[in-house]
Amino acid sequence: MHPAPSVILFSTLSGAGFGLLAFLGFGLPAVTGWAAFGYFTLAYLLAVGGLIASTFHLGHPERAMKAFKQWRSSWLSREGICAVAALIVMAIYGAGLVFFDMRIGLLGIIGAILSFGTVFTTSMIYAQIKTVPRWNNTTTPAMFLSLCIAGGALLAGEVKFAVPLLILAAAAQIGHWLFGDRALADSGTTLATATGLGARGEVRAFEPPHTGTNYLLNEFVYVIGRKHALKLRIIALVLMIVVPLVLVLLGQSFIFVALAATSHLVGVFTARWLFFAQAEHVVGLYYGKR
Amino acid sequence: MTTLPTSTDRKLGLVIDLDTCVGCHACVISCKGWNTENYGAPLSDQDPYGANPTGTFLNRVHSYEIQPEAAPAQLIHFPKSCLHCEDAPCVTVCPTGASYKRVEDGIVLVNESDCIGCGLCAWACPYGAREMDAEEKVMKKCTLCVDRIYNENLPEEDREPACVRTCPAGARHFGDFADPNSNVSQLTAQRGGMDLMPEMGTKPVNKYLPPRPKDQSLKEEVDILAPFLEPITEAPKGFLGWLDKALDAMPGGPKGGSN
Image (tube, rainbow over all chains, first blue to last red):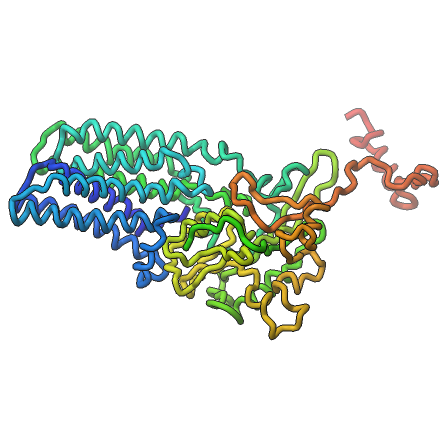
């Protein structure tokens, strides 16, 4: 799949932003006044910044409001509704903390659930896509959610939560990679089933429909990243898990946690780039590719 | 609403005969022509006369080689367009309701003025039937020529999809699959019409007729009288025959010296 920078930026930044909002919703850390203002500003910059970035890949961003209609069937629609609901609830909750020194616990918990819900609905946009076997399994939401929670813990400076959550996120990410590497073969979809001609002999793509490229090949048959996949996986894992773990175990002052969170986000960005670049869409089979 | 109808009154679709298709791409051209000049955003081209021309097509013809175990290889031309699936995954993912499946005839359509160009429907389609137009930034797909098949301004013989109307080999058939007596239902029954990627659970309406069986063995005698014909010698005659013998007799040849 084509790794659109706007979508990768969205899932990285919003994932961490909603993770931080969830922690704030649970009262971790229990901040009020200016401190709360700082945390909420960071969370909203990440979450809203990511959401704005995501509209850049739309052909007609001016029609984005129409996307809230089809929540009955569409995970993308559900994501939009969940995100807006989370942002509104957390804004009221945050205003209470910042301006009135008042924590409305129930509102915080609802906001936290909606924040996790937003990341879950994002992950389901990918997990529902049957045509991309690498995404079409439970390791996708597990990976998105565990990274969201771990990133939130880091940004919230909750080191005692961050350490185990980072280890959990590493396991979920590695699980997604290992499962994903076999997914296309395990799906049973081949050029033989794609053409229905498999029973007659070995099917080979002889001639593509056009000599040049097209939308389908650009969007779904992105092969550039695959050569360096292993190296990029190691880089991603080191930046998003190992470096932050070492940093927060070395010291828990602001600078250590800030560096840990930055490294984590760069690592997640790398992993999300691979999430797209490595994903094989079955339409590639029609072109004799994967 | 992008939830799918539980059933449709009619199931309009195509039968594509892989035995008959000659791979002329006339359907590709007529489709592009009709759908550029008529309903909806035109199918644009980018850099059409330059080094890297690309463009939007609703129908593309692939060619595949089948190599049976003990028979000559076969070339199959394979037109591919929207299959108007009963369980269309492209429709349910649409966040705006721009994509929908019609209850009256089962055609899957895009309301272009509602399309935000997110591309998710193209991701969901296993067949590559949807393409985002690079100029208009909306999703384009086969409409089954909805502006032809009901168009009373056209002569009756033209009220079928442009690809079907133009096919010089008669490899494309249009009709109602809900009617067991329709031309398409009968063809499907007689020739073993098949689904593409049935494991995807999309329940395509369009069916593909597999190529008819060809001669299966390379060694099998084609003509029962052939063995009685005088054998034709394959050894060269005249000057070439002499040269062949002379070269064979030289050292290094099959009858030549010991090296």
